[in-house]
Length: 82
Image 1 (cartoon, rainbow, N blue to C red):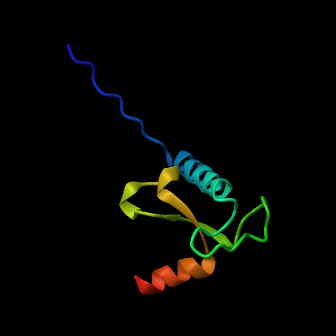
Image 2 (image 1 turned 90 degrees about the vertical axis):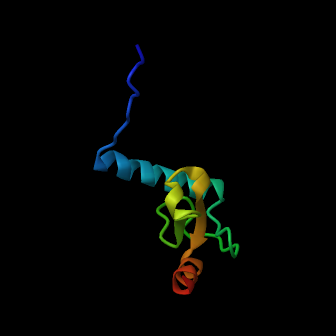
Image 3 (image 1 turned 45 degrees about the vertical axis):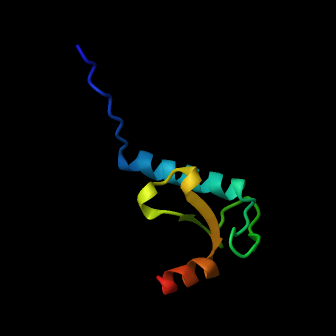
């Protein structure tokens, strides 16, 4: 008899926590530096408000390998050109 496949679901707090953790890991991986223009965050390793963890492919989810660190001007330019 086949085992039923287990499904994992997260409530909204767990999803939010996961997203924040992935964002922090992306910033750390990228050295708090925009991967497009090289801007380095002036905030150090505290709360970062001058960078975004941006999805490379929106449909691919929130995993670390699908996030890149971008500064706000680059993010704004990408949104305007879309």
